[in-house]
Length: 261
Ligand code: TA6
Image (cartoon, rainbow, N blue to C red; front, side):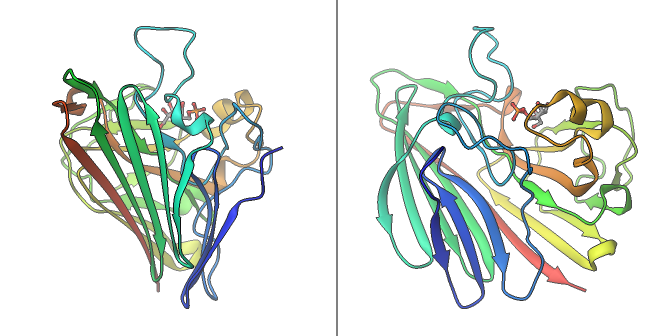
């Protein structure tokens, strides 16, 4: 079992964060429903990813193209990060991976603000992929839509070809939108709220729902949990991977804000 998560508090919200993976597990604006989804079947063990909240993905997104036995979505969500600073409503974590020093700043208030800074501390240029793989809690994904990505090209892992309408969830959905810096909005009429996902330093957005078969295939995800979540992920991957010269750094940021209707 993992060590207990750290608690963040602010006048407007609370959050819990595991040192394992620097993993934000919950974000709870006062008087509102939870903003992040967490599977009831998630693992909480060293060396295993937590299923829900905000997994931090680095230095590759998805399977490792060069090493089939490497863990999906990189290394850093599987290790304990160093705690560099602690305030009531802000934590700063650090870890080193793939010749880079990562600094991850988590702060809460009216928003959940996440900032991943990667510095190339090696002597050669490097290229990496990264993501804040955020799982949002929803009333029922089948009632939800995602706007902000209309007219944006995407690659689907599951053969989707839908066009430029707002995204609706009627099947397994797994889309990597390229060359987009747009703010996405997750519209949840069932819970009468909109979740705004703002970002900077990111050129990709992934939208994912596993639907029925994929949910059944994941041992750390309940068969009936797929309607309760939507992933909107702030990403740099594939053609939008980050190239960093020695000594240089890059920062990606995701800010989550809830509007109650
Ligand atoms: O971001 C979407 C995705 O790449 C899906 O294809 C699915 O694999 C999901 O991530 C979860 O990946 P994980 O390794 O956490 O099971």
